[in-house]
View 1: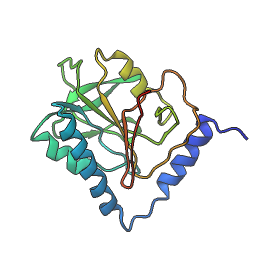
View 2 (view 1 turned 135 degrees about the vertical axis):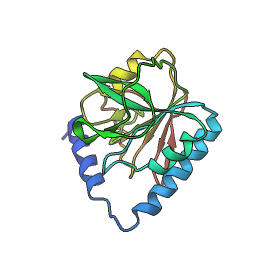
View 3 (view 1 turned 120 degrees about the vertical axis):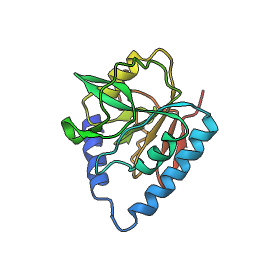
View 4 (view 1 turned 90 degrees about the vertical axis):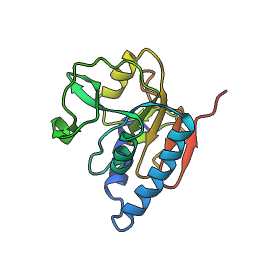
Length: 185
């Protein structure tokens, strides 16, 4: 049987939802430590974070910490895509159970680093997400390509190339136990 994007997504989601809870805090602390080092190394000032769902990598502590040092943004859903809004409280729970900051009239077009939750990653370092294509549509609107980091609570990677051309590609994949960098050929 050939591995397809849909089959791989289902396997990765099952794997993520079955993660043991007993050492979750430790695993997320390791992930955030690695992520913080990468952000500092890249010297980005404007960063697009995400606010995690229950089974995604929980980076909320790093989000709060970076908020004091950098310009931090969160996605704000608009139709089939989203725009970036400054991270500010209170957050409200919206469609799909996602927490968002309030809407903003600011038009933010350039960011230095983009941190994206990922369900799976294929051999081209392309993202397998939830299948809605919101990050792909958003990425297509950016003027300049930021440094993209995919984050997973547990490694779910395949060497096979199963993604479509429009799926976004990362520079780095970070998990609690592994960090994979896309090679430049």
